Image 1: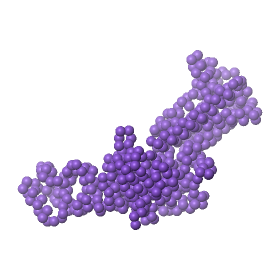
Image 2 (image 1 turned 45 degrees about the vertical axis):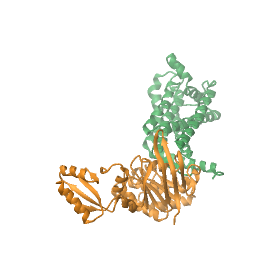
Image 3 (image 1 turned 30 degrees about the vertical axis):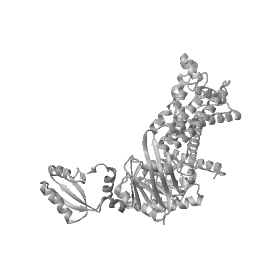
Image 4 (image 1 turned 135 degrees about the horizontal axis):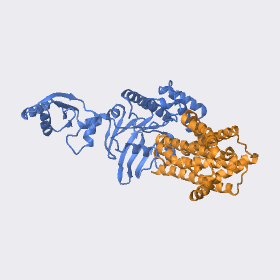
Length: 257
Length: 314
């Protein structure tokens, strides 16, 4: 078993990821949150708020990164809820009585969450292009977008797993992720931060979502990036490591109780 | 033919100040059905969780198939399967998909997974429901699927934690048949239950757990013998007679149907003595009948050793 430990954990992770995909298509709520909501939000921001917001560029060009990030926030509640469901439903317990690494359960949720969000992001981009989004990004910039988004998605997915593990009920798991949903609104996602009151402006400028959005926006439509990409990598690289370590620790703690 | 597969010695577990298991001792023979019988909170689930390596004991030892639960958890996991109190099936997957997924996670070969899945669906009467999602299953079907999942890897010992709690009477009987059939195939079954009838029906050996201690152990017959061979049940219509009789006799008092059960040796002499005593005290029982002892009698007697005339609330 030891020499093939890695082989089995990859295979188990894959088995659990397939399960997540099946879940996605069988749960109307998650299907809507993953694929319907992104398109609706895209249209909503451009056609309803867009006319009234001055950003110095076509609003559709400005808002794409914001819509992508906000959708990830909504989707994170599903990840957290399905983790909690496995905990309270006894599946996790069963895994722990079997000769496999229980972390494959978490890996399945993370991969499922990642794939869900990537598809949702593609739909946002597609809808945006249909209503006039004209990115200036070349191949290199697109690769940058994918890289930054992947880092963001993995860190948020692991954070959602942590929330899911901490929650005692499925309902409270969804409440935990409120923060992830809320943060993008207090950033440069939808409006330039200099229109906000001073104290809010300070918060918006220094929270992780703003550098993330500025980096994505810069890559997509060529606005100034500055050092935002480094700030983003530090924020979400740090979040990824911390969430991963915390999730693993919760696993171990549950074992010894 | 004494082949012990589970051996528990002096097992202890406390949560904070609360002692959940207080020096538990018992052995389970290979291929038998062993029932741990007790009320809610007596320590049944804690025992199962320690034996299935989910939690660590604070003291004592427990071995399964020669492996120590605290030192050799990974070896134990290969020989056991656990079916917890809540059917741990994936609601959004079909019965077949549940089995296939757990088969893969048990690291069985692809064709073996398919073969075992088909076998188990048939064996557990789930063929018609194989393509239906588990969320549409009845309670009994979920339990069957749950146990079927536990059998994928051919375990030597199966832990069933309250396998019939919440099932309707018909499903309960079906579950009993199923458990007996499993035992006939040579698997050792460790089950917990709060139903005396269930332990009586299924178990080769019963251990009664109360406040974290085994208070009595033996076959159903042995436990019944402790209480005596037969009971006389007097039923009363008027409460004055019932109350006087309670002070006069030592027996199990059932307030709900105003009856008193008394252990008897079955002789007419004993019956005559009782009737004479009633006559002297002007007590008029409504009716009298003999009955065989049930495990309820054993249970009531043991869990309330201190008091004469245990109360039966049902």
